[in-house]
Length: 463
Image (cartoon, rainbow, N blue to C red):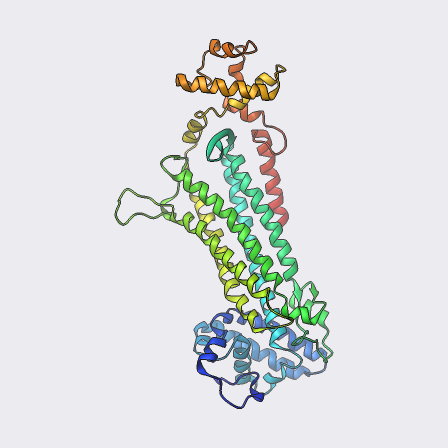
């Protein structure tokens, strides 16, 4: 494979070997080979419409490009043997080997600046669509679990202290809400990725009669860029994706943290399946939630890529600068990390072993129904703040006696207030406490059933 540069005419000496390696992007931008060929196929058709290619030339170039792609798919490792500077050089050299000098004509009116911007957008659009499907699959799994375990009561926590009883299904749907917002963010990122910069040239546009709207339509873009200088330097769409990915992984990390805690012996609300857990090299009794710990940790990795690219972009002058080569490795890694984390959480949820009895037992401890007593007194016209203070004292008394609120005798209650009657015990039942939260967004079984149906409709709408 020849190593001739795309830009060597102005230079009289060979570049330093170290600079050559420092400057090369082929080791990572080879990831763009398929979309680079896709873009070149569309550009060949645009050149025919502009009168640069005749039909025979265009057909020859198309056949050659498809041959390059076929060779790559047959032997993906072959590209690693090339000393080409980047994927664009590699494709042009490979195409030259098939169609001769006609390959050089394909670059008419096109710069690597608008070429790489187009490649990156095409590639990211494909990946964004795949990630969208993974999020929808995870939402579907959450809906299935919420349906299956509807009625199971879990202690709800604030400050990692048991606070109020909630349905386990309601808890699961809290993460579904997060993922739905992530889908919206991803949709916004996709809309800003879905802009075709091809035809912008190096920075000033093209002198050839390229129908940019037809070219964009040919490539599947919804619209074209409005300014050639911005088009070749814009990487906001990459930032948008990285921000989405960070937010999504923060949500996955929070779910992982919950499940790591719930998987522990101190909680025992669930147990991870053996297929997604690991053991200790020293302690034979251990079963570690490594899968979720890795999901939790990889959030920082993607955040690093976002901060890195923001730092690169904040100092680059208009228009294209080689700094922009640094957009790819972080983006490619963030995409794979996001895909892997979604897949891993999906596997964990599909195979998790829940312990509803332990959840229920835990919900009966810690005076989670204390708020119900305050509401009981409010119903008898005691101001809430007064009721709140009074119930706090009753909890202290019950704790001193080692009793739950259900076990505390009526005479103890009446020593604090004559408003207490025997019917107070009815309001302490956890199922009744949960069922009373029936307003929109609440944890009652009826409300949660509606929320599950709404979630399924939203999933279907996206699909």
